[in-house]
Every structure is written in structure tokens, then in C-alpha cells.
Length: 268
Image (cartoon, rainbow, N blue to C red):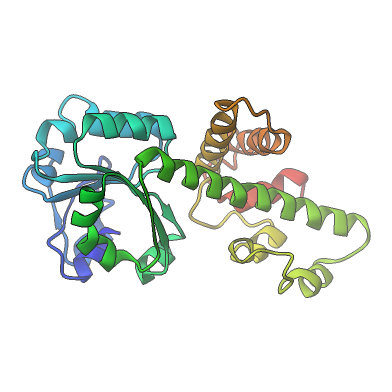
């Protein structure tokens, strides 16, 4: 995101809690800040992207966090996949807050084809338009930050659940005597396989660990889905099973593997 904004002519300053990770953005024209304060204190728009609720709270609301240095007139955007409740908490602490999670791979973000879900006050969304126009032409607006996150959690569960079902479908086919070439010939272009799953079709079939969405974050997102449903009194059998499956992968040597490696949980 930072690299695309910098390449698109925006004045971008970047900062990361882990040193050394801002290289691609700097190469695209962004300036690297030495501290969060330096990155935030003169910004018109600040965007954070972090791994989970606790990390977002620490960076946004903790001592020396975004809230301590963000100009009162600036828009604060969080693009992390977190719970709707945490996003609503941020909306209550920042006057101009927008939740803007992303649907798409890093490559889709770089190329401008990723979809964004933006929820927040209308005036904040309007002020954000020069940024979103550079990032994408696929923007869905919501009236609140929590709705944007509810949509993101729902979409991620559809992907995670689909990967688990695809992996099991391959195991069913193999159990029936089909080899992988036959499975690929039948299903690689089948309308039964959604486009979002087709991007990982080959990796699931090969039980590959390569990718960009680690199992630990997949387990976290499946947990968010179960919690979102439970908050409305819904006990969902498939969601609970997918969460348990991903948590078992995240607890072992597949923790850093792509979520498509859920196929490895069924043996080699």
C-alpha cells in the first residue's frame, strides 16, 4: 500500500515496529521515519496495518502511540483485520477514524486490483478519496468502522473455509482412486471452484507451504469469525471446525506456512 501511494505521487512516510521491513516502500519513493512520532506528527492521513487486535491497540492507543502524536485534523485509517469491537473502540477514540481492511493479495494491492472495505464518517471518507483513488477502483463504503470489519471477517472466513473444503475434496478424490492430474483436469477451471480459491488451487493440490497469508493469521481470522457469530447467539459448526483445523496447524511446524498448507494436515 505504501509503495503504491508513493509511486502514485503522494508524499509518504513509513515506519515499522520491526526494522528493515520498509525497503520496498522506500524504493518506491517513501521516506523512512526513525520513530512513530516522526511518521505521524505531521501527517494528513495515517494508515496502520498490523497483525491482530492487541497490536493495533498498542500502536494506536498505547503510550507513545498514534493517538499521542496524530494531528487533530488528520484522518486515522486502520487496515488491519481485527474484530468489529476493536474497530468500534478506535472509532470512539479518534474523531476522524476509518476502518479500511483489504481483500486481495499483496500482488493485487501493488497492481491496484485489490478491493477495499471502508467504514467511517462521511467527511472522513471524502477526505480519504485522493488516497483510495490511488489504491483502487474497488471501494465499498460502510456507515461505520465495525461494519467494514464485519464484512472483512466474513469474507476471510469464506476463503478459509473454502480452502479447507477444497483440501478435503482432493482427499476424497484421491481416496476414490483419482490422481492429482485427473483432479486438476476436472476442477482447475470448474465453476465449482470460486476465483478466490482458484488462486490457491495448485498450492492446495501440491500441499505447498508457499504464500503470503500465514497459518497463524488464518487461525486468528477464523477465530474472529466464530466470535462474531457467537456474539449474535449463533453456534456455527463449520466455522468452529475450520478454526480448530487452522489452530492445529498454527500450533505446529506449519505456523508460518500459507493457509493453503491446511492440505498438509491430511498427511503427505
